[in-house]
Image 1 (cartoon, rainbow, N blue to C red):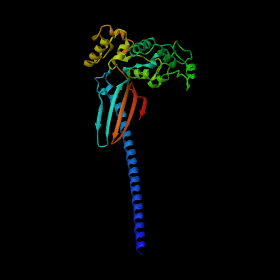
Image 2: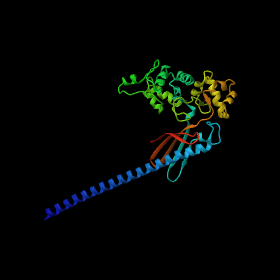
Image 3: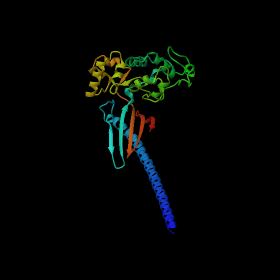
Image 4: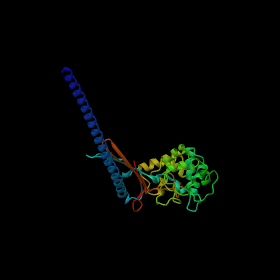
Length: 307
């Protein structure tokens, strides 16, 4: 009798332990499912915040530039924007692509190299220790023929690589695409990234102007625009524009009377292409939208990435 009671007690304890284990597993699964659902929901809300902020940034940019004949780093759009509410937080950073050198302007639509652009790129390359032969390779990548320039490369060369691929024979789609071009190692591309763009003022690519906005260009780009712009001259341009933005190229005479004529082809004072980086945060979730837009006339989205 005593043995039966002992067996019953052991059986009860085993059943109870199994029930507790099952309950713990069920509770854990419910917790995991709930957490995943909440994480997904938070991610969706963060994505909506980022996307809405990007479109809001475009509208604000368009409004701010509507009656302005120049753009500068002193403008309201150039200031980072942050806002918190009961849903989450947003951050918007706007930068100007027109203060960089347009790589797609190296080759004209007739496959001839644009000498002004080549000279600018050579001066930039000299600052960054990039061999001049790299620009011929880029020109071959951009033009639509299969005749390699000196030091350049066309599809025949790229087909000999492993993995093999063909030359673009058209405009670069992104700056990262440079890594496919002969001579543009990861180190070279990383050195170039802060100073170059693939976006023209007007969509169209090859044959577009190399003109750079002197109100937003970094020091290295200013020095590349003309051989007369030394480091000290570039610094004076940057200081002068900080005090009062240039509203016309002729106003560069405030720095040096010769600059206006020197930068007639390679300089300008207004940009139309901007990169808007909008971030949305909801609890632990974060999403980013990066849009490149052309605000010349009707706003045109040239690139849109979400991550």
